[in-house]
Amino acid sequence: MKKYIDYIVLLLWTYTIIVLPSFLFIRACPSLFQELGFFVQLSGQIPEFATLLLTTMALPGIGMFLLLFNRRLKLVTIWKMKSNQILFTVLFSLLLSYTSWNYFRILYSWGYFGLVLFFLFFLFYLPQVVLFLDSVNFGDFKIFFSRQPQLKCVLALSFLLLIHQTIIFANQKVVVYKEQVAFNELLPQIKKGEPHLVYRSNIIILYGNNFGIESGNISDNTYADTESVNNQFGKVNFTFWDNNKIIFQVPLHWKTGEITVWIEKQITWKSKRIKVKSNRVRFKLMDTTGSWDKADDEYFRQLKHLDKETLRVNGYNSK
Amino acid sequence: MDAFSLIFFVNFCFLVSIIIFRDTSISLVVSSLVFFLFVFFIVNGKLKLSQSGFSIREKIFRFHLMFTKRNYISFILCLTLFFIFQPLLGFNGTLFAVFFLFSHINHLDNRAAFFMASIFFVFTIYLTVSAGEPKQAELNLITAYYFLIVGTVWQIIKK
Image 1: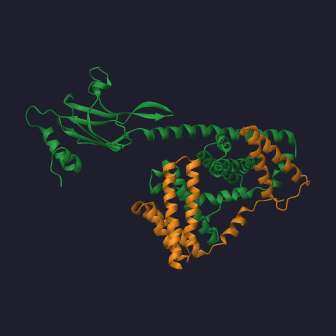
Image 2 (image 1 turned 45 degrees about the vertical axis):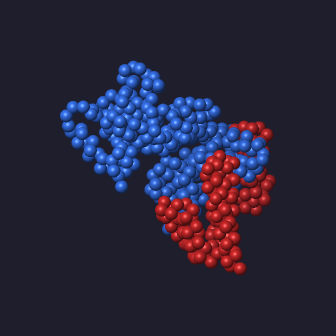
Image 3 (image 1 turned 135 degrees about the horizontal axis):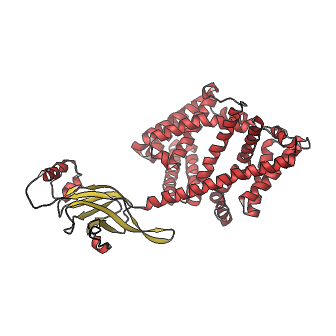
């Protein structure tokens, strides 16, 4: 078992040393030789930068884990290093964690917790990576040439190809994920719509992102109930539209009760114009006829919590 | 020939085979065969390396000695301050505040500002060409120009 693990460690090391630096170099080439379209074409053949970063982190990690499992090495603990080495590792981990934190949006969305997490990870991980890369020398490859060297070399090449295909497969997933993230970033997103409780002719403000400079349509579910699915009928006239804000008046054709509102707009995706919808926000349209009830009390209670702008556009004094 | 030179040669083989075959799997096979051929010669004593290991730790340790503890501590302190104050003062504001603090602690001259400008210029090229993020590149370029101005004004004052 130990022997097989040694083979795997050596092959992981080989892949890390041969392929990853070349891939990273090709990725950087278009920046260096931007006049040469050749490098741009070439970089299209190799995995995405995110995949390369993940692979650069994962392969030495797996190798180190196997070496620990095989009891070939012991973990490097930062407090046992010399003071200058500790300071260097802390500094390098800080720089790497900040760069990675900005690059990987999932951890960026966690705020400073994500940054600290990255920092601690690198602080622990970097010394292990160096130890792994240092642990192999050319003399260790003797085991490949002891018995049946041809068979061992064929198996080694197959294993290297297996690692490579796994990375290519992972890259496809990363590409799909990145496309999805890029597409989602183009979608209009309503963050807030107020007032929540409205009477007919009240003015509603929708706040959010990516509404676009070109105006789109505001749609509601009122006519879907009556099976008259037609954008024209669902259209709401707006008085103001910009990328982050839409102002419109509650139309007279809305029925009392729950109203769901969303935005539809045209975007260009992969050179095609497509219609996209935003998330939905709910409003409650109240009846103005009948006697005063709890819902009317609720309407006036909500005024205390509305933005000044919403109050102003609805005719309430707001200093 | 040492271990690093040999690896550079194998990397070069990988790059050339990618250019020739336009397929990463074939390039991997070719460069791995070259690598195993070298290893075979080394193991059988037909090729001798001045150093068979990489001694990366040793090389990094030599790098550690280039800077003093004071340099490292001030760098870490300034980076931490940058992370803390960035949401309050914005990227450029915090960057310049921290840069001046770092320059003051380490007694740097105006070349530091030009050095920072060059880093931002290089990063702008990467963002424009490789990453395809022109907006971010534009912001980087503005920061680079700020550093150029700071460096020039610094030199004028110093003279």
